[in-house]
Image (cartoon, rainbow, N blue to C red; front, side):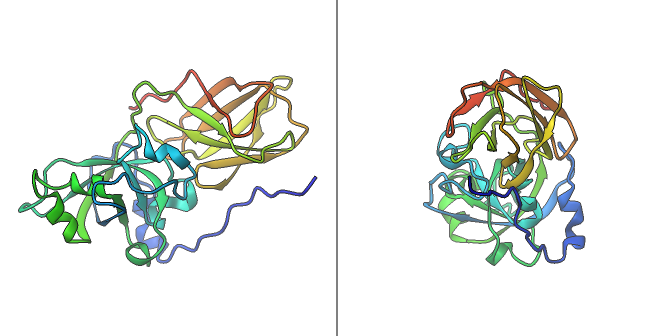
Length: 261
């Protein structure tokens, strides 16, 4: 069988040390931080189709629909920032609402406004418009780039439990999973898998976006999956969530989720 790698591409983050505080914002951080924002897609659209996190068509349906956003590398964190949630609010009192918009990280914007270590949000047209007071959405979008403030906030997916999508191309020797609908922190710092016939947890490697993989084998299901969040190191174990007769491109939903603090 062909050799497959579980290696993440290296992304150079300019001026990283200057923006270290933005990298390590705690969950439910009460303090607001400065940033800039733009929008993309159609004026009232949902935003990206897919995105660098690998969520695919999930960004087009609720609960992600119209709440998605691309962020600059200092928040994307080579993909480990995927799934994190932020509240974003604009500052011009003449046109901006006092209401903050909740944004879920589903994509990266590596250039332009997002380059050179800037903290930037590239929002869907719908999310950007909701930053404005009633009747002024179009005028706010016409401004293009605006100044905003932001902070981390717990993710909330009512009625949803954490799910694991088995990526296309997975085999008994190369298994790749995409994590979906993680409440609370939203981000994943580490991930492990355990075969039913074993007591050993095997480390998976982060490859890109919200995708993780393991090379071993032959791997035999059912599989239990253990997640540890990046922000607060909280751990959750989904017992035998992936069945013995699993299939590539299938999604398996656990009975668990993190409860936002």
